[in-house]
Length: 114
Image (cartoon, rainbow, N blue to C red; front, side, top):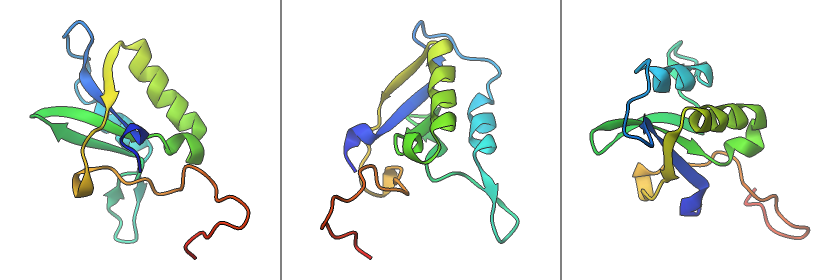
């Protein structure tokens, strides 16, 4: 996955003020979560709360636009309407948010790995 396939939405506005209520990241993450076989809440593979440099953030994989376009539009519109800081997620390796669905469908004759 390319680094521009994930964005980080910070809990602060462009002017430096914090968005209230302060639990908006958990609220959005929870709406896209589901209960697993163990009856515990599991965050979506495409939208997860995280802490970067000691600050709560929401990491959104652009593949959410493919798997759930309405949810992606909602999250991005929420961030933009609240003037939240949005940047590319440049973390790599196991610190990066994986994309559970391929962004580009395989072309005719291309191997899918299955």
